[in-house]
Every structure is written in C-alpha cells, then in structure tokens.
Amino acid sequence: MSDNPSGVRHPGAGCSGPANHQVLGHLTLALAERLGALIDFDGLLRSPTPRDGTGNRAFPDLARALVASLPGRVAGVSYDTGGGDRWSRHVGEVEFLEAWPQHPGFHLVR
Image (cartoon, rainbow, N blue to C red; front, side, top):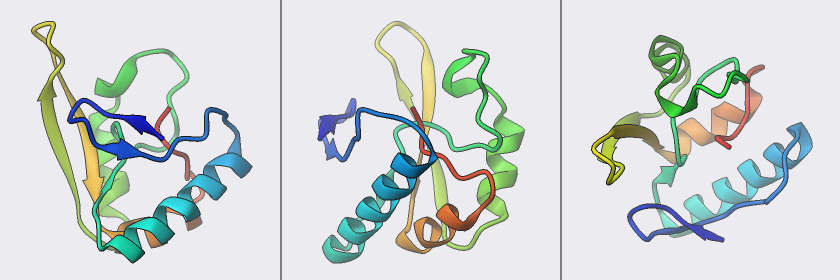
C-alpha cells in the first residue's frame, strides 16, 4: 500500500507487466466493491501506454477517448503538485474497473 497526495492509501504491486497489472486490477476491484469505494487510478488512464517519459499530462485526447469508450463514470481530478504545476488523475466507479481489464490497452498507471 502507498499514499497518494491526498494521504489516501491505495494498493500497489511494486512490479510491472500485464499479469501483475491484471492481478492488481482485480484486487482493487474486489476491494472497491466490498467497500463501496471509488477507484483513484493515481494518474491519467490512456491507451496505448506512452513510453516516452512525458508524464501524466501526455495524450489527453487518448485519455478522454478511452474513458468514454467504457461503461461507468470516470472523472479527471486536477491537483497542484506544490511546484506551481498542475497534474491530473482519473477517479472512477466500480463499473468502469469491471470493464477496463477486458480492454486490449489495459494497464495501470505507473
């Protein structure tokens, strides 16, 4: 478990790869269903995953298209980084996380 900027604890695997992302996604889904909680994705979801180091502000059109293509509600939440910059993260409903692992571009934010 790790903290996000709001101090909320969230599951983390400390490793990468499709199999690990699937396991963590299903664990998060089970917890969110049981607790009746929203899911903080700790960054912007997009497909495909950018590998160019552009960070969480990259590809806003891909992020919007991805969340619009799946059921459930997802909101972009903007926050101050403390260095005068603003970043965003997605927060979504259980219904979205039920569908997201089935999407061909499924990944979790790193």
